[in-house]
Image 1 (cartoon, rainbow, N blue to C red):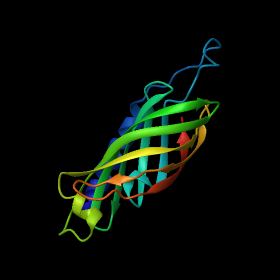
Image 2: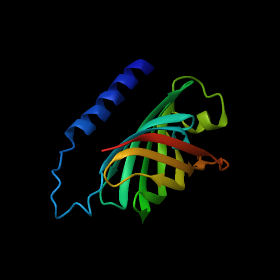
Image 3: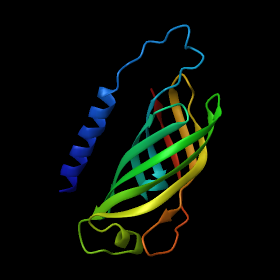
Image 4: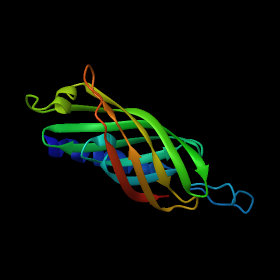
Length: 165
């Protein structure tokens, strides 16, 4: 069953990536150009142990990301809105979101308890993001506390490596 979900999520992420139109760069906008899309793998972070994420910039400052994670008996979909402050590829990233998920068996830990079928764990992000305007290597390191419903705050963090295009 988990294999089937992995295939579906991979297909959706591939479709999103393929459907983003390519833009030709003119001499006029070469100084204001920025990459609207990034894909990266995050260890720790909003996905718990890890996640594979797609990030889309609505403007240079405002964006969102969606991801996929599966580990143990948990499958999750981190979704975050984020805001970038900075320039020349060096940014402070601030965001808020949730990890939507479910478990496939009886719950076995506090975090998994919060991820019951249809459950969600709140999260926020504050950290450093390196993403050059012209695209290429992306690096992120952030503090991402998790807020399970009716439970304690779990301090957490993550590190991401990927590619902007």
